[in-house]
Length: 393
Image (cartoon, rainbow, N blue to C red; front, side, top):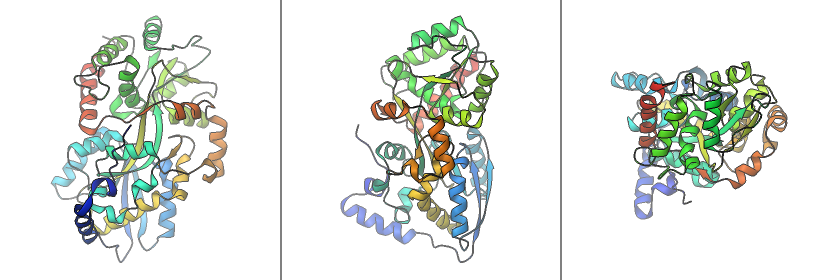
């Protein structure tokens, strides 16, 4: 697969590159003379992956950052909030930690400062840093944000082996299982769930649909399958955490998951350690990533610090923190960051809770990038209207 890399090298070429790069250097914001306080909103659960490294940056750069103020918000609500702040010329969110959901909505609505397109000279050479699949995820950002964590993702099925004696091996068997066990299968709303997103985008590969990259005209089998599957689903939670709790409590027997959502909840004791995962015939990874995105309207002094922070986050030392407790397994977007560089706690958890077959799946199964921003937004909206609104009908 040819990767389209949205980096300084990929964006600029020949003499045009020289001129554009000179302009970028001329526009590079100056670091402030006194430290700034930065308001950070997490809409992707990314803090558990990056907060340690961010706080290390603050401690090692006291002349640049006085403090971080962290908060969390649902991804679907963020674009409207940012748009309102920008219309009023009162942007009080300096950095957004986002997955592809809010990133895509922000690209469509022109909410982000084009970090790579406009400020390439203030960032490292991304082509030289990223592992190939993470470089492909960076391309989805269209120069608007910077990929800081990566995982092959899913979709995977997680189930309790004492309640699912013969797990399905293909989509037909899954549909038959849900008919025989109504209300026992669950996945969360794709617009606000990583596993939900990978499930939505992974089905066209599982079903052999006409064009997995075209949710409007190429997903006939997918939309029909989701509608039929929905007849056996009680409701769609607004986030992934609920599906994990219901699996653990016994109100569901099988849910959709991905690598990190398999490892982390078991490590935290939210889901029993004995839970199992599997794939369906025709499985392709739909990769996932999380990004640093800066809203338009952030002051130049804060922007300068955020660019410097972003560069720090792409160092191997900072990337090693993203192994965390397996939440976004593996985690590093940068190549050549082995688990041995991670804190000992991370090493111990991942060595205990990862699946031995993950390494083989990651090495051998095709990796597909998610839909580009406009098509992902379309897929979310169509799912909400045609699938989510008709649950159990």
